[in-house]
Image 1 (cartoon, one colour):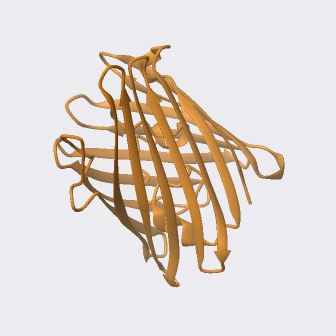
Image 2 (cartoon, one colour):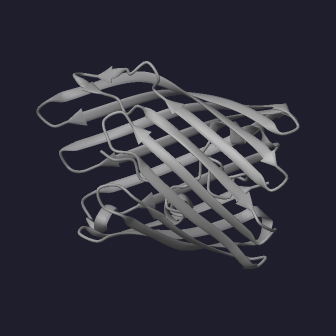
Image 3 (cartoon, one colour):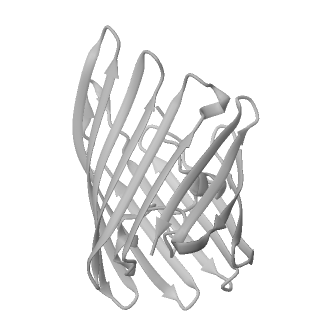
Length: 248
């Protein structure tokens, strides 16, 4: 199954590999070195409005020291006869004032009625760097040794991106993602905060069919946040998503 982003990342067109904050969840393992103390994210989406297709994601992280943190990511996607679960253990560390490195170990489990189940393990390596005072770059290599699950190749590819923090109110993001078995995708996103409690997001990604993302987030009291987002496919329709998070 294709991976579904959380509500905030979906609204940004998935262009989050160079995002310099954790407002859209843990989208780059190296973000865990940014110095945030603790956080948890829980969300779900309804792919293309199909009620029988369920997806859910839970992420959490906790700082180990002033330079590093450990995280956990659990994803589920499934229909009545087939489902996938992915478990990721993440680690990120600051290696300098402007450079962060991260990695994660992945366990993927699939189950199909009448066909049984299969499990495979792989890993990823990520980096995040502040190239200029307002410009960040990010990269991630997923499954570099091309592990398989059964007879099928586990998703393997490269993500490269950049983010421009034009001000405290506006962040622009761009990314290229290339999977081994799929054409390259070009993604772009914008995150704008007209007032402190509100974030507006817009995004676009290319591919065989271009898809548009949009959504908003509310910053509530005591570190709580509520994000909603959606992706529009011109043939298959809308994929609505929601996420609640707490961070400090």
